[in-house]
Image (cartoon, rainbow, N blue to C red; front, side, top):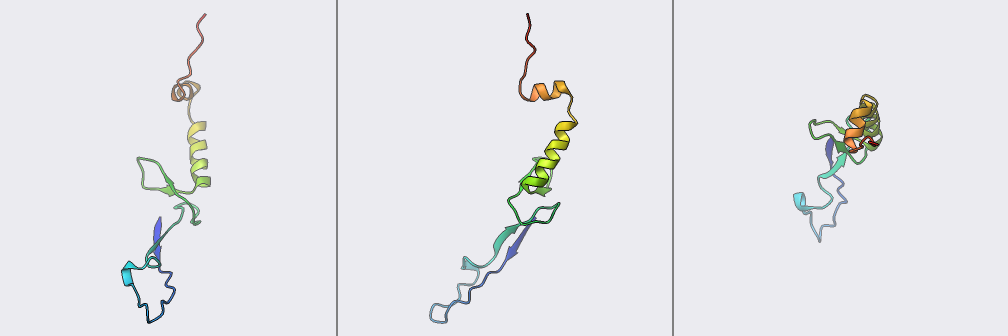
Length: 83
């Protein structure tokens, strides 16, 4: 998930506030939808769930474990040696 944070630094009056143009305003912070930790996010193309590397690796490992040997071979284009 992406949340926006205001990190106002309190610009001096002689410079003035830049408002929404300020680089310290509306800073996007990303959080894992699963563990809620701030992190870089990854997403499957067919879902809106945004996961950190640790949670995504857990999901990928579960998917991999559920594949048959043949399906794993197909993913990497592994062929049987014919003699």
